[in-house]
Length: 287
Image (cartoon, rainbow, N blue to C red; front, top):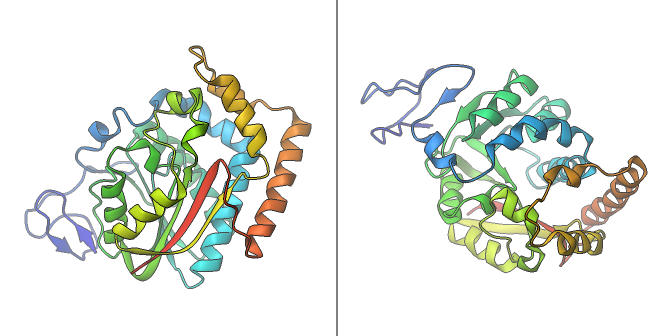
């Protein structure tokens, strides 16, 4: 069901014109909803989108996270037929799911036009929306809603979780990934304009308060945590931090780290939940 962000009306229609107030979002390569630019102003360094797509393609971390997301979606929501990614950025997750799960009806929302421009080129067939995650124009519209390394960028993460609940159908749920462990805070978080790194219990509490029931939580990037911790310690307090250093690893190290993540994901699939890791995965069902 669609939600008019102007008057609050709920409606089902083939287009987005509200039958009550007559308003509709701006049309283009993607639908533009009111207030999206203002919401994004201080949430992420917009200039990063120019290089992010190339960095994502070559990074073991993005490939491994995509694999984990695909596994969690298949395992915990095997009947899902629709999936919405909130904060889809350049479309790296949507592109992977589109290639692997052609049966899914995919959609993505993102406040930054610069990210959506890249995503549109990556997934030309997928509906995209320029939106504020704190005001979603959907109610019980999708089987699963995902937000991957998004919540840490927003002060009102609890409101985003409530909006994700609104957008999810009864019987569906959400997938979340976030950076974990406040003690890992470094120049990476400062550059990325993170508001927080999460403790597992903190995120679970917020997810449950938004009306979900957590069915699985596990850390990941766990075996590589000592490497990440050393890197973050080395970069802490740097004023000239270059984010591209995260992605300029020698090819042999990229392959080795990818192999470690492959083993880690296999252990997670067998039921092992890691208690520590630089990132956290939470799977929750709509209560």
